Image (tube, rainbow over all chains, first blue to last red):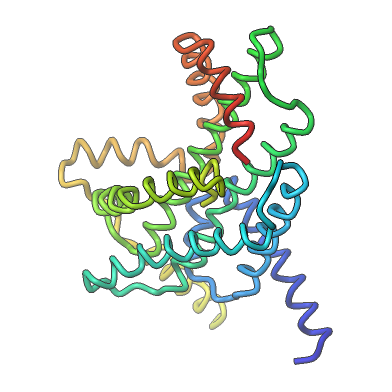
Length: 203
Length: 77
């Protein structure tokens, strides 16, 4: 494979990621069903590159930050722990599941997280905290909560669909899986908060 | 013709790759379908208005604490 072909494949993957991201906004069910069958790993490279760019960007906004590369590796550990947790639980219970399906669907479900973190860092520049009790402060607070809630609901939809298409389990079992996941992930997030690595878990 | 058949088969495999959800109780199953069907496509048409309503309710209930929470979340990136 020559250099030109690698570049062409990389840009085609970037375009596919962009198209899938738009589809996840308008038609998350259909998009996630397609993503769960995906095999092009360059798309994942594109998503992780955007995540890395984000960590590089916020490095310049924080006081006494850890290097972006270290934060990125901690994010990768979180991500692989999450994906492996769901995959291994399904394997233990003898489900015929594909690791790549978990990997792709969970990578694409990072989209709301990325949008929220990017936008919050931009708001930090445009309208730095703390918020006040003025009319503008109250108005922005309501807008910010509504905006965050919308993205949170979208994130929950995408995570649910990721699990639905990767595990092919029913509603109740997916809820059990999520509760099981939260039993270790919430204390783990608290630990990351105490260590001042992530104030809001980046997952 | 073969290409159309192949595409149709691929599409059918994709669509029927997943069993429909059954919540063991028809009332629950119907309710689940009622809730999830509008979320499968264009979820933001429902999610955005509901989020604004929820944010307003939170504001009227928690008032000052909500503004504190926003200040806290703005440091969350």
